[in-house]
Image 1 (cartoon, rainbow, N blue to C red):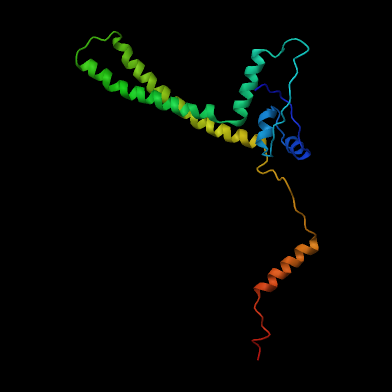
Image 2 (cartoon, rainbow, N blue to C red):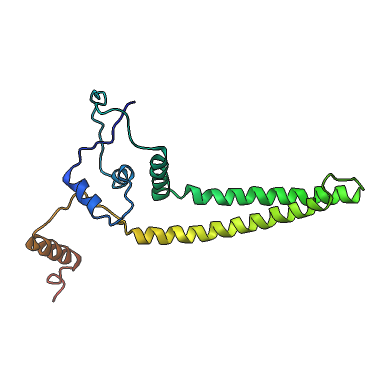
Length: 183
């Protein structure tokens, strides 16, 4: 589909976007994040009149990075899986190196095998702790962005008299009728 980056937005959506105090704004993601109903408007897109795009690959990569880091913790969560894979390789490597040493086999890289296993194990520990720190940093980042917890799409307002009458009616319904029990 040949799409452009144009939107028609309701005033509520614009106000919700303006209420978000972020500086690195990824508008495509933010318009979806605010949660209002969206509908595609199909039209025939005309040929570009002014030559070719001047948007270089470097800016496109920056744009993609803003999209990923602004709305996803997936890159942080990958580190736990990489950490587990490195730990598994190290744990599998320990008995293999020990067996080859004890069996008297001549390894192609004799002292390097032990070093490699230790480096894999230490790297897995480091990545695990980077994962833990990254989770804390992500939570701090969420708080600093100050995105609203809720976006209210509609408010029903009652007059103060209606609210007081409803409270009085609810209070009267809870109290038992004492006039019939008096003797």
